[in-house]
Amino acid sequence: MPDKPSAELLISEELVRALASSQARALADAANLPLSHAADGWDCSVWRLGEDFAVRLPRRARSAPLVLHEQEVLGPIAARLAGTGVGVPAPLVHGRPEFAFPWPWSIVPWFDGYAGLGIPRPERAGWAVPLASALIALHVPAPADHPVNPVRGVPLAHRASAVAARLESLRGRAPAAALVRASLLWDAALHAPAWADRPVWIHGDLHPGNIVARGSELVAIIDFGDVTAGDPAYDLAVAWLAFDAIGRAAFIAATGDRYDGATWTRAHGWAAAFALLLLDQSDDNPEYAALAADAMQEMSL
Image (tube, rainbow, N blue to C red; front, side, top):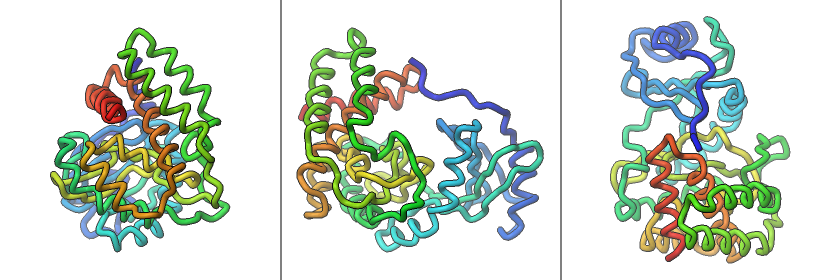
């Protein structure tokens, strides 16, 4: 099945230039900085503006609230994580609809590095300690008016039917042993004690595609569109999504006693669920299909 949804309108260089020139006057010479297309994700189109900035624009109406969530909450989150040395793209410009572009958009810092997907797992072990520090700083209780996400950080039982459907969809299309392993991990996570404390801030989509790094150096965590509050196990699934056995052991050790055994069991289940999602919906994205296959292999170790 295909992964990325189609854009609902054309985002051209001319449009991005017009928006930045009109609304980013607080940034030095924004109207004249070089502008180039950087990437298109599920939700946003990203354009590099000069050496230090990126313009982040929703590709579809459904993504517009995600940009608003980033604008509302990333300032304090970035300030907390600054002490860990891990960057966060807190919006510098809160763009508004203009020039027939109907949704909010942002200008954020540009982090110099490469998408973590392209960095081999053995090199990622260098991310373990700073990523653990960043998540400990992120996972603090959130206020009652935090952005709500119906599928991220929720009790696993809320996603049980969706995971069962993906297991059925993949039957005959994915290795049987991998599906059995994923099913066992998910079932164990379902039966683990639930998160009983106050909801904590979570990234909500933490995997190597949303990490910027330079080889073994972790630079930033990006794409907080799914930011919400709930069970931190959802973010901790990155232990299997990003690392090999050595890096994973270093990452888990670096969290100390911050998370209990039940939380790690739920995290293992969430990793299985995320891998199943990517296996089922990445026919048009080889990098994410490879991430899913690699994660399934890591979960068998």
